Structures are given as structure tokens and as C-alpha cells.
Length: 253
Image (cartoon, rainbow, N blue to C red):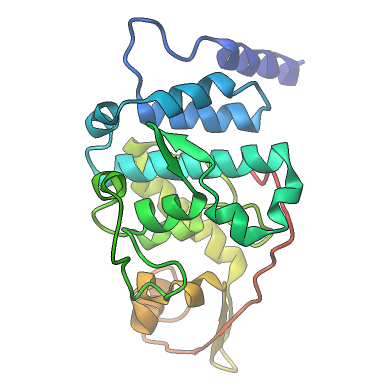
């Protein structure tokens, strides 16, 4: 009975008009609603239309700091991954095309998943360069709405639809630091394995792909020590787990 009541309440909230005629759109709130709508399989076409028709001025007013930018872009990324895979899982077969296709429209700008991850959230970094190289050219839109400072914890918040990805969680700008810490600690708790006898640690492949984002080897050791995943002062040999690209949809928490 309780589950039925909760279900009805969720359905009622999601069926309410997204924005009243005289109420300005909150882009971060919109990104949160979109993620909820996709999760509970409601019709999100209206939200996608609002997202596409946002004015750049509305984004400028809302995305005034990195916490707001991270919340907005992480929610949009995760929501659209789940939405597109919910429409057609076969699109994941050609992953290069899937991540590079500009199928997401935000404020009239056509974006790809790569644009959001490596442009907006990584500060215009080249995708496969370990985090050491920035793009030579970024669009005016990207320069305006990308984060000012890269937060390596985003790698444990973005879900690309694969089995090895972190779980999907809704992010709110007022709690970004706490939420990213929770997501990071939860992911690393299950995805790292320290062997004190062999003095080695197995890490997720993400640490290899984006090692400069984490501050290189020294930064990796420091963040592992800070989270008690290795003893203070320890510098174990690092190995990386193979990334499992098997499709995993609806990995919410």
C-alpha cells in the first residue's frame, strides 16, 4: 500500500506542468526534473523542448558558478544517456558515433555527450590525451558555459551506459560537494582492491584514461590515502581493471 501511494505521488509530481506561464525557468531544476522523468519513464518531450528553447541569457543567470554548472551538465548528460538508450539500445553498438553525435540540444546549441563531458565538465580537454592537452579551439558556447576549474570527481558521477560506469544520481548545486564526495567514496569502495602483501592496488580504468585530471600518480596516491584506501605514505604499484563496456541501463541509486 505504501509503495502504491509513493508511486502515485511521484506520478502526480511528474505530471504537473513543468513551468507555469509566468514563472522563469530554472535550468538546474529543469535538469533534475528531466532526470527524474527519464527514470520514471514519463513523457519528457515537453522538458526536452524547454531545454532546447532556453535562452543563453537564462543559462548565464543560472550557471554563475562551477557547482551550478556541474549539477546542470551532469544531470543533462546522465538523463540523455538513459533517454537515448531507452529509445534504442542498438545505438550503443557504435560507441564512437554514440558519444560524438550532436543529438542533445541545449539553448539552441547542438551538443554531443563528448561535448558535455570533455568540453563543459573537463574544461575543453582533448578526450584521449590523459587530461594533459586542452583543445586548441572551443566554441563560444562552450567557453561561456564550461567549468572554470576541473573537478576530478565528475568521473564518478557520469554514467555512460556501460557496466563499469558509476550509478546515476541526481545532483543539486547546493549540495554538490557532499554529493560528489558520496559518489566518489561509494564507487571507489567497490572498485579498488589494495593488496598490502604485494604492495599493489587495482584501480578503475578511469584513473588511467584521465590520469592528469587526478593530478598524475602523486595526486592518485594522495586521494587514495585521504579516503583510507591505502595507508598514509604508501605508494603501491598500480594496475587497472579492464573496462566493461557491456550495456547497463537504469543503474540508478
